[in-house]
Image (cartoon, rainbow, N blue to C red):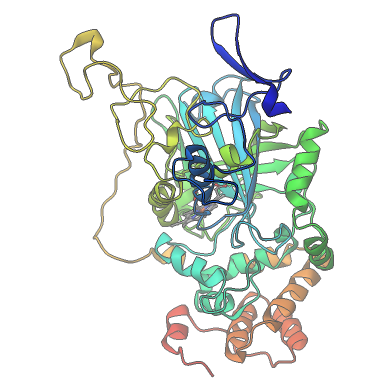
Length: 526
Ligand code: HEM
């Protein structure tokens, strides 16, 4: 009946409104042609073959056939929401970043939370790191703070990222596990990469089974730079502190929740925002200078290390509020493209070799995932401030330069398009000298001290959970030599922990692990 009622009405402004009975819009083809029958394909006779000329059928099936895009190579399962960041105070003495100039200033943001290893359809309560990616639509361009809920990372150099992720995701022959870390490949890799032991302690803690996204901390992980108007640089580590505090579920709850409601986390965020319980985090900064960096026991470019809060307290400088769910999951949550390379004047990178590699990887993968170099024109990715480039063409072009000039310098005067400005982004002119070689600084070598500090900083029950998690995870590892190698690292972290885990596995406590290179030299499975 609705189809029969379809009529074309002309709106007051002269534009065409296609309305099917009352206020229901008419179903049209992508060309805007009203559809009279969406139930039957066009056939020759009642029992005849479908006709090639049925362009409505062809267009509909063609579009459906192409609905899927590649899921993210990591962090495939995620959930996003809109909100704002509000600065508490001006930080003009530390950074010229526009969003930190004026107390009370609000900047729109889009945030996507995610798990790392699981595929798009995996369960929310997997024991895994959570992504905490924030896109700030500032008045001087988009700034993406692409962080996690753990302050350190598994590896020091981005060149190992493909190996880490291959080892963490499903094994290539069997295609499982889809979501969890408990398998031989993962622990094999960890046991051969002592730099990952600090993070391994964090992922065996309750942090990796958060009660919801609303109860998670977030971290920028790397040391970044803040640059003020005079060009002065201050190192910074970024922190997100949840207003609701930090809470996790217990492992047996996680296992049950994964079965009962694999969408538990995304449902929680959706419900909270829909009912006006807007989740909130405070942005915290750890600020330090070159003198501190030079004297600190670890290299501040090493992403497997934290800067202890008792040495550099966290200064809370603003709040993040999520107050709007997406209109469309695919448009926004799936097509958002976070990119560590997206920084704005007043913020700069350091030479952290993990960060430097990320700056290539995100842009590169997004071309593959989203299919066109114009993905920044999608509303979720486009800046909310004016932008003008001479970039042109490519698949799905929306924003080609206007007018005749599409290059610069040009002599077309006022019609010549955008011009550069000395007030634009300036890279911090850090002085660097040295030999060109594949190597790491000496200060990157201590893999156990902070792992030990993390473990002993935990309460008794938290320590028990870490021990239980190691026992559970390693009991799923088939090869005894891999379990032994992990235990040998735990001896270096805390002998008591190593003994309890060994006991739980029914194994002897091995000797302490040797330095990394010696372990890697002996790769024969036993
Ligand atoms: C995706 C965080 C290291 C490559 C993500 C996402 C987060 C994240 C939060 C999901 C973004 C979203 O929600 O769309 C981190 C953190 C790291 C880290 C905190 C270490 C401190 C790396 C490294 C590489 C890498 C070393 C590669 C060299 C990727 C890629 C994606 C991704 C390719 C998928 C991006 C997309 O398809 O849009 N990462 N990551 N990450 N990360 Fe990382």
